[in-house]
Image 1 (cartoon, rainbow, N blue to C red):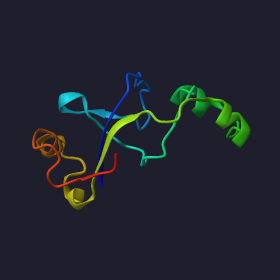
Image 2 (cartoon, rainbow, N blue to C red):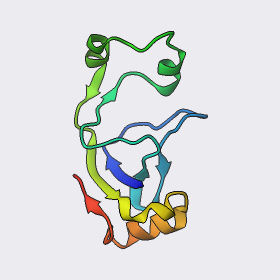
Image 3 (cartoon, rainbow, N blue to C red):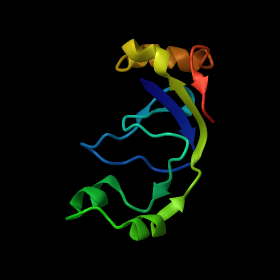
Length: 104
């Protein structure tokens, strides 16, 4: 499934991690499996991966810096076969996501 999003101005860093892939027109391809309930925390990929254990629910909730970071989110589920073909995904972007479902 290809999920494409646009979100507010946050940095996407993290070499070697499943970070977002940049697409046309400022959109990003999700490589983790997020949904409309995603929140951004103060943890970087590097910080989180260096933890000995996952943070408690309380610590995780306290680390939220934006509980509504997405501007748009599209599910291109019917386009599974193009998941790793960025040229085809960028074509969906240019066609205003005609074959996708807008989740936000």
